Length: 363
Ligand SMILES: Cc1ncc(COP(=O)(O)O)c(C=O)c1O
Image (cartoon, rainbow, N blue to C red; front, top):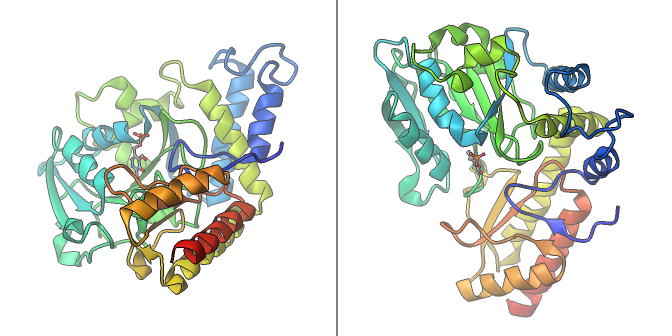
């Protein structure tokens, strides 16, 4: 399959070309069944094989400890903003849930949770336009809280937590929507990790939820069945008809990741791709990075040009050159290059070449 354009969109984002090709080849006839994967029962043996091999591959690639369950839940990442307090704060007397506001999704997560828990925002970088991850001294993490929520990678601003907080006995929860599987993570530090699938893994609309088994007992009495971690774990994510196509796509994305050499290899490649762009930005005298250097993400590279006028020109000229979806989020402006796992080095090189040329012409 020839690459027509490089897609730098933040999500839904590009999938590996090999994965898209395999989906195309198998779409009308899933492995000799004579029907499509979107037409088969979520309870048939063939789908069971897809689901269990996706879970097995995830465990194998991440080294996930045995006392964690892998759930596939509906409603994308945002549904988890409500599911979390319902599942984790239900039986804790304080009903307290701690949040770090490092961007818009972190803020929305706290707002959504405040319907179901006593939300306390204990750190924020809002005042500097979310350009860094704020300090989080241990004394701010009140030990009677039901959980501490962080957004590990802030998609709009291009920042990420490079060191995770030590929350003591408070379960640490991370929204890893825009970085799951992009770097090695010690999952044993977390109570819950969740991610919408539409960045590194597959189609939008579902979330992967990794939950430590003991926390399955923390849910309140009135959690809707489809949001209930314990129920979902008991039913192995098949409480109702699941999105068979999305889970099939994840399985292919995980197989692709394994072929790339696993997470250590993809992390190295991601570091190199991001460094190529950040080095160019820092040495250009024309582009200006948005995130403070020590908090920069490898997945979303954000930068500004000398004027908004030039930014508009940059985005449209890039698109004409086959570099798609480089405009920053509508609430933030500027330029954002989302370079998730599937973005090949050639795409980053094409963007770097374009940036050098543009700076020469307009700098
Ligand atoms: C960090 C983060 N959290 C949550 C979301 C919301 O995801 P969804 O649209 O799947 O609900 C996004 C979407 O881009 C995101 O980047």
